[in-house]
Image (cartoon, rainbow, N blue to C red; front, top):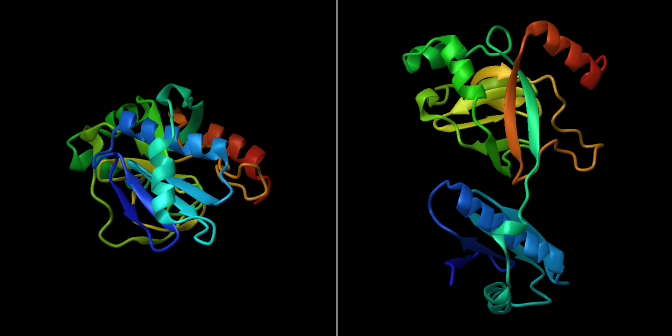
Length: 227
């Protein structure tokens, strides 16, 4: 039986491990998908993370012991989890990536090396958070791992692609932030008027595609209009 702990009186957290691992994350999403497909009347929300799944429920309809029993008896199949592959164009460096030279110097690389290494993998979207549409990606090459800024910026433009430690992802909306910004995508990756609002979902795969400044502004105008 998987380790389970309580989240107050209306939630439980199921742990699949303590590491960031694609197979573990697939199990997280397989269980989440099975619960959502079953649609129990007491369910409020399931929230997948790197290696755990939070289940929130209506405590007036079910006890946590009954939730645990339900989850323990639920059958789920990792093979049922199929993620999409989504290409994300990125203009690296310059005004779009003010920290790329620091990332290169910190790791004993050239800027071109950073771009090539960062855009090579097929990244898995492990989960969305801490801001709307902020995608936490797995699979970044450790050769470009870089610590966060000592003092976060007060404003990071929407679409900014960053590195924090061994993680990479992008800011889907304008916000403060402390990740090292190496580029920016012109895509509108989060739009509250769209269904779903995020361009990617947990379990999807992302491929970053380098573009130049001209391509950036062409795509940006199509996505954002005069914003």
